[in-house]
Length: 331
Image 1 (cartoon, rainbow, N blue to C red):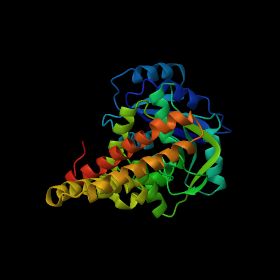
Image 2 (image 1 turned 90 degrees about the horizontal axis):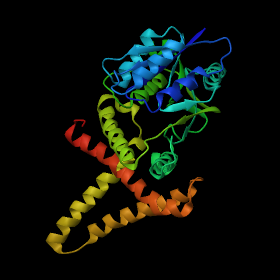
Image 3 (image 1 turned 180 degrees about the horizontal axis):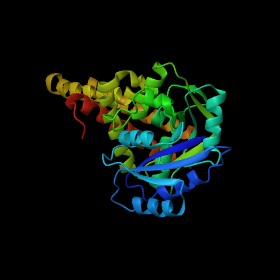
Image 4 (image 1 turned 180 degrees about the vertical axis):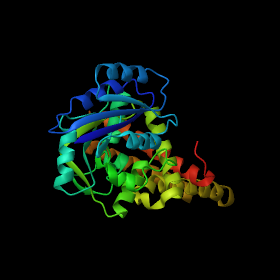
């Protein structure tokens, strides 16, 4: 029996060697492994690194993805895969040696179409900004309690970095190539609608590497927010309320600020502007509580920094959604 790893890449020179090594170190019982690195014609050293590993290990194969985008990589991988089971894995992760075997065993035990392990956010360097990004990604206030980064063990509505029965993905026509982001949400929703079940186990884990600077974190948030709006246009059933809470937050701030400016010039009163400030203060206050809940890091440092990063992260995310809803274009 063959299990095929499908890993999309584009300019991943900082991560790809460690990621492939974690693939090669998988401990499997009576399962042959195939590793497809579906690369979007990287312009850094990613392809050279993969080719070097490919020359030494026949399990690894570099596959071109001329369209460059993630859903194309997934579909190319599905067509190329020799296995009846596929693992859709990310290049920004490192996986426990028993990750694939455990997910495969749980897939059969729980009678599900897909199973993922526990996903733990861990930065690849010890810089202060990288640690802040890690804290945000590990906080339910930061990324919501429904994010794949903090999802609990059990039957779930979405999985990331999972082992799938390949035929189920093919029967649904593969991944939606219109979705550069959220293609996994779309596929998970279609699988559930087709009557399949998904499962997340905490018997194994992988380490997900988040953005390593606050600027990159905010850019990541804005991009994700934009694609939530686009995903809503394409397949609104794949999106849930928690995807749009930052949008509602930013929209409320904008409305209160505009109403406050108008109120000041018309009536010379400040009720709406006061409410605007109160909402921000409330957010910062919740951010302080969320900072203290996090186990790692110096509490004093987290209180000074994290509430403002939470605020910037949520505003960036919500602004991405709001702007895309208004313009119906992605930039």
